Length: 144
Length: 144
DNA sequence: CGGAATCCTCGATGATACTG
DNA sequence: CAGTATCATCGAGGATTCCG
Image 1: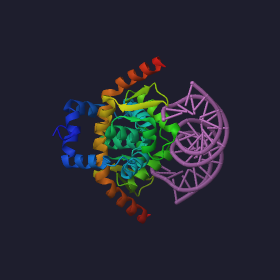
Image 2: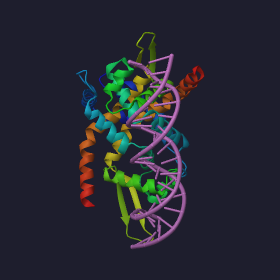
Image 3: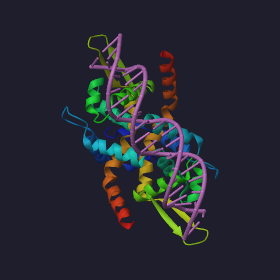
Image 4: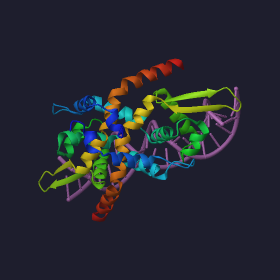
């Protein structure tokens, strides 16, 4: 079990996903795909969520201020909003310790961990092809 | 070769990606991750690009107006912008036929196909857990 | 410390009009 | 048909302030 992608997904899942993405009629895109993309990209997989997701994945439990410090460039507002949304989506847990000063810990749920794993293939792709893309961009810009 | 994820990525790639995501020092997030996410989410993997990517993946070659019709809700401006960026990034090819009226065909490059495959794991995850997420949201909203 | 509330800006996107 | 150009909007997100 060296490959998290292999271990995480079964052929049936892949088949199901492919089925979901195939529209037989020559009409429009499957509305479920639209909903999928809207929900996933627009609400779950935004930049800050992905950053926090990977951070919690590698560090385990962290408190609010730690995440704020570690995710460079995030504003307090977006941090709160992102964490709240992750909690709402069941991706992370929020634990308030009744002490003064307050201490609030965040950690991924199994669902959060699985999302992180699901994105593994994308990170792999990105790392593998980022140079190629930059080259393609330079080439395109030169041609134009 | 029933599983595109298994066939596409090697254990070495996974290891490399994991290495990329692990920061030993207790400092900040690896800047390369930041760049990765910024580039990928902010420029490549936006909503419209993903929609067009999946469409071209399943339909093969399509002309400009066809894509515009099939991707519901996209404006002509965003369609042009999306396709141009995909071409620039080396994800798609643009073929102009010198006829009147003009005919321009778009198709994925191997790189574009590989990106589509990389997102497979995310689509699988999304389909598998979307109901769970909605339930979590209802539960959270009820608690609040 | 961990937020909530407020105000404000700017850039992404849509709408519209024009063209080879 | 496949764009380009221009203008208008609107909401995501930053900065700031206040609070338990």
